[in-house]
Image (cartoon, rainbow, N blue to C red; front, side, top):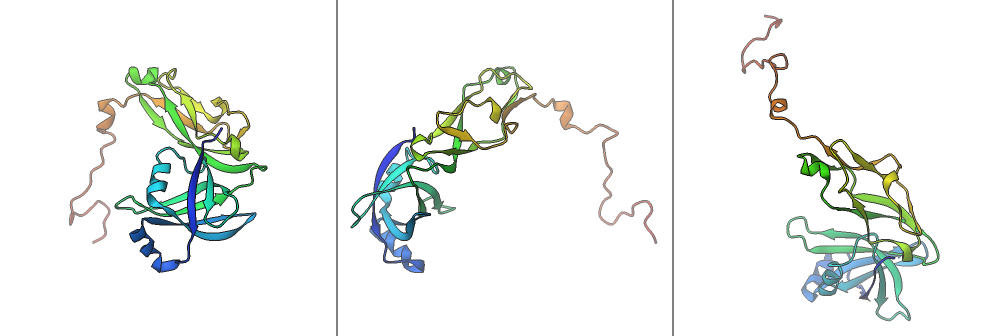
Length: 213
């Protein structure tokens, strides 16, 4: 079952380019939208949102968003968090309003558990997928899906078909999609080209065979 958290919000009057003024007040601009609600611009406390994100997961955590002036909170999930590319602070948040009686499609992260036998033998663990597409009722959304890799030998892999989905959750990725595999270590000799593989590259200005005068 998904983690449910509470968050307060205020209707945002300042939009567009002037929204940077919210930063001075310790607020983050956000938007609430969904098929059954009117799109609304809101703001949330940066401190409260940063604290929430220490345990919340984008796309999976259910949030009871209490907008100032509303009679009851809105059930939302955090659909997207935009961050500053250099400093990492939150610039904008998208909240997706959900109907608790209807299933939704989203993505959840995969947590790989354990150290594989193949790694102990010198192999390299390769991750092909770190997220899974799922469909579930909002209350059944998992925070993440764990996958134990400890039994994998060199050459082994795990696919979506190997996952036992949590109750109420349908996996939407192709069953044969590989999530993780253990590759044999590359020998040092494989890093050096053989004589047959060596390609002569002429220096700049040097004529190559067959070049017309």
